[in-house]
Length: 87
Image 1 (cartoon, rainbow, N blue to C red):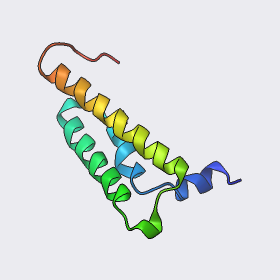
Image 2: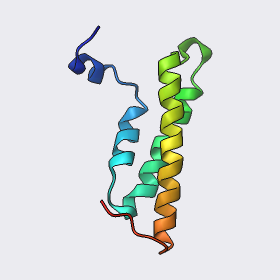
Image 3: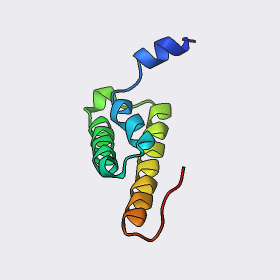
Image 4: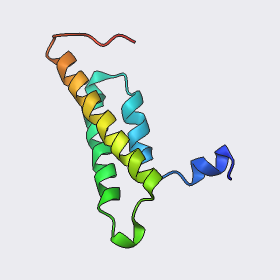
């Protein structure tokens, strides 16, 4: 087992743009952050077969894509003036 610090150092590259996307509060930056994170996840999925994600990482990738889809939908819904996301 590794400690939290080691886990951060070995975090998959796709998490670097993903985490800021899910934490972004500025609606003018959100769509770009979502796009960047989505592309990073797809890049990871499409890496050569020799570097396939583990089952755990594959589940995390699927969850991240689902989260981005929901976030994009919510942000677009809010951008149309139908609702305001309050935090």
